[in-house]
Image (cartoon, rainbow, N blue to C red):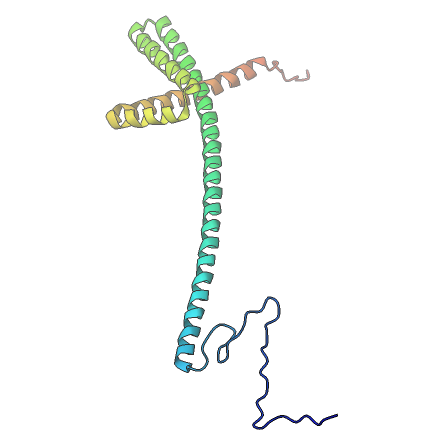
Length: 206
């Protein structure tokens, strides 16, 4: 067998390397991020640009998440406010109904007072009492049958237009209600006293 020797000067055969599947070819003098390492200044600028871009993307993600959370909180707050409005409306409706019942009781008391004045030959005062009783009874019906929002609006409007009459009416209603309650309490005490059996103390004869 002949001895085969390479000719001089010897030039080695260059072989190419191929990246593995899923890996992009990397050029000589560059990093995996595509930064040219042969120019340090340019490499630094590119690294800063990439860092700023990633920071901007992170901030955008946080903004999106914060926006979603704000929308959820706003929806929950709106639901809570509506529920409180409904509860307040129901409570106000109940109070209005109770006020209407109380005013109806006051109207009955004023009507009874008018009858007593008429029996005492005080027709003029009896007529005033009858008119007051009718107006109070209308107010009682209005409170029992009207919407709370409408009632509040009407009261505020009347108080602005006629403040003196509003205060006088409130005072008169309160005074009549107090007088009626006191008279009712006295009549109840009188009835209880009359129903008690008469007791006599026994004294033995000497």
